[in-house]
Image 1 (spheres, rainbow, N blue to C red):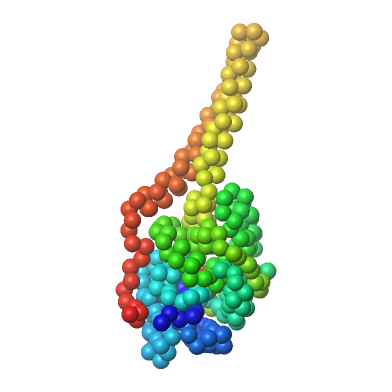
Image 2 (cartoon, protein in one colour; image 1 turned 90 degrees about the vertical axis):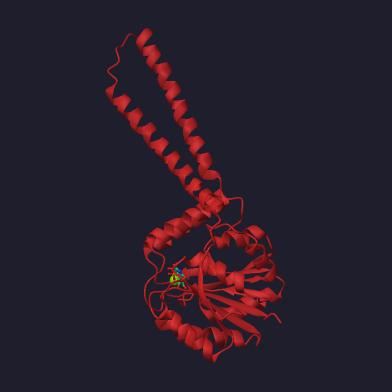
Length: 309
Ligand code: UDP
Ligand code: MG
């Protein structure tokens, strides 16, 4: 029989807090139902996370683990969790205790009111750098403007979703995952609960600037064609300016007879055009790479071992 609740927890180098994490999640969830599973996805941790998880799994049959062969990234870890989760409702929560497990009953209560998606919106983010806060704020607002999907602002992946939503996401085999976008794309009834985002209990973020940038671009390329259009908008503007320049050059040569000295304007034009062209090529490149990724159809992840039957 399917469990009522699945909890998906991606784990990347979280060994020192795993027992606290397990205790708090268990505490929180067992108050709601006895029919639950906790799915830890070990995303190629370099510390002893997997040993910790296996130890817990031997003592508690609610605990399932999926052990990746290497680091595939947070979004892929959550995707794997979704593939394996059997619950009627599914919670996605970070494993670093920045998403307080104590919020799960509140998420579940809203879910029981009939919402298929209940997101946890952060009213504040503690312990994050100013740079991260400001870029995140800006990013979500830009994303909202340029996508056709209503991706909620200031919401991470901490949420509860109905089985139907999970089924829809499972059927999307895009490799460059942007799960919060995919959830929003399904269009099921959505609401939010609000919380204060805690600091990381231990260690540092597993999202390097490089991973963060890729993630940010995935969000845009997966749900918006605006940057591609931006390339043509740039193109039109620059062509317009160039056309006016041509008229000016002709007039100055044949009517005003002011000889062209022209070096500065020439340089400016070349540099400007060069820049715009490179930007446009870059934008196309970002989409192209993702098309290649999708066409190759490699598996999203490789599982080394798991205790899921
Ligand atoms: N994580 C992961 N794979 C990665 C990076 C992170 O599974 O490559 C996990 C990590 O253990 C945590 C969650 O994803 O449970 C969120 O990551 P993190 O806290 O590093 O991101 P931040 O909160 O700084 O955005
Ligand atoms: Mg975190």
